[in-house]
Length: 82
Image 1: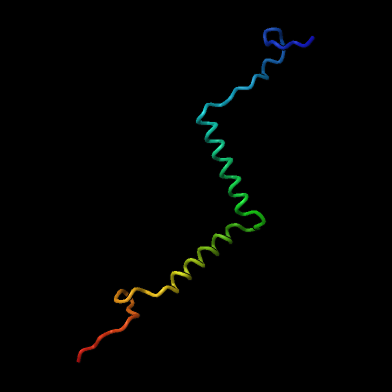
Image 2: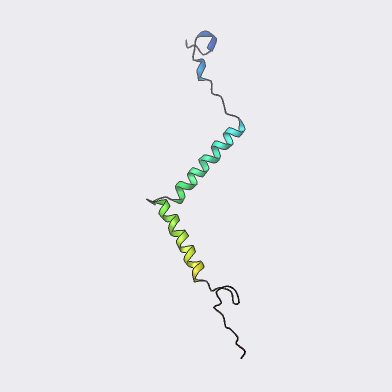
């Protein structure tokens, strides 16, 4: 017969203890973030390059937008009275 009680010299260290709620919640949140990053960059060899490209494209879009008339840089029509 197997010894199942720790007082009889059986495997007493096999009792699993569950972590408290905060620890468990933190571990689950970290695992979810890790999965999300993996799926976001799936098949991408260099994720930092992808982020740099996104930022560069955003900067180019901002530069291509016309400035508001009458604001800095002018760009609009100027009236001259003379």
